[in-house]
Image 1 (cartoon, rainbow, N blue to C red):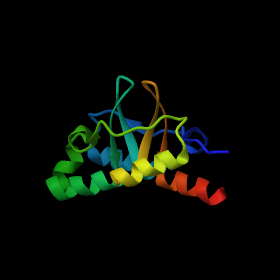
Image 2: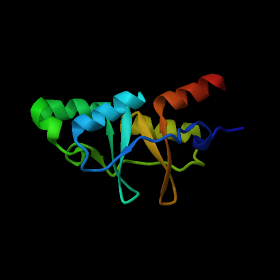
Image 3: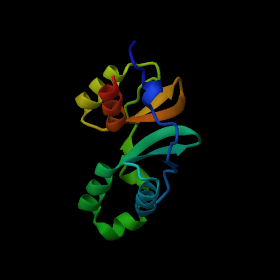
Length: 127
C-alpha cells in the first residue's frame, strides 16, 4: 500500500500574518521548534517563511531592518503545494526538484497541513 501525504503531514500549523515582523516570526519558529511558518491573509495561503528565508533576509537587509520588516517582504510568495492524497514519493519528487524542505498541503483551496522532508524520510524509513 502506498503512503499518502495525509498520513505523514503535520496539521499542527504555525501561521502568521503578512505584517508580522521577521524577528517575531523567528521567535514563533523557535518556540514551536519548527523550520517554517505559513503566512496567511484572510485564511488564504500567501507565502511560506523558512529558516533559509530568515538567513537570506539578514544577509540582504541586515539585522536591524529585519527586526522591524514585515515577513511579507522576505517570505517565499505563492509556494508550491501538494494535495493530501498525493503519495509520499510525489511529495519527495516535488521537494527535490524545487530544492526546498517544506511543502504546504492544500485540499482544494483549503490549507490542511504541511509536510517536511523529515516527515517524508521518517515515513520511508518505517516502510
